[in-house]
Amino acid sequence: MSLKAYENLAKGEQLPLETVLANLKTDDAGLVAAIAQQHDTGEVLMLAYMNEKSIRETLETGQVCYWSRSRQTYWRKGESSGHRQSLISMSFDCDGDCILLQVDQKGPACHTNRRDCFFFKVEGNHVVIDSAPEKQS
Amino acid sequence: MSLKAYENLAKGEQLPLETVLANLKTDDAGLVAAIAQQHDTGEVLMLAYMNEKSIRETLETGQVCYWSRSRQTYWRKGESSGHRQSLISMSFDCDGDCILLQVDQKGPACHTNRRDCFFFKVEGNHVVIDSAPEKQS
Image 1: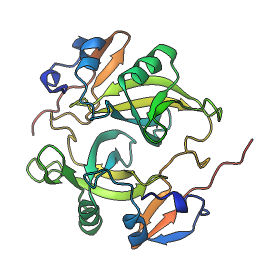
Image 2: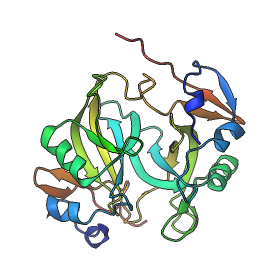
Image 3: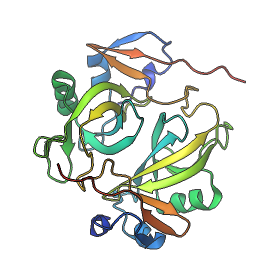
């Protein structure tokens, strides 16, 4: 499946959410990639994966729920750490295999306790660690 | 592979780029996800995929090159459309399965001629098309 059939709709036109969910271009495991972006600063925090059920739960509860590929279970972000992601808005991309989540991230998004996951920055022939873990509160 | 062995390095520490490339957590097709973000506005433009060779080409040329999963070939962004992505910086995430590209995107990033690919926005039980294609110049 894909959202390609709908890509030429004009700005302001609507589709039922169910139509979009039924046409997502999931991988063999039923997943799509999901990017979490801090809604007010624009920081890209992390990339994770969602299945249809985690998308529905996120929309219903307003708290971001992923599917953990490593643990093969639902991953309610911040459930154990307290570093919750509250959903501000959700958008699907043109072909329906990626989601952009605008979120309000409480504390660090990364499991290393850094604000975001993208701390290996290329500098010439090296990669520099460009952020430090936040202090535990 | 994964970058997990390096995640506790302190801010400012360095690794050889070759070490990082050798430890990326690629999928079965040798790919990692790559998010393109407009460097000055923070807009998340698109998600695509890169293999090691396309990462190297991007770093060497300063023009973003993806691997197209649908066409099974290198995809030099903007080569036919003129809508090039110039690389500003490249960062890898904590586990090494995602890249954040800070880019300077000329014109629309989306093949629909919209600025970005995330134009299917959830509004309650509907999805609204929230941007229009840019005028062809």
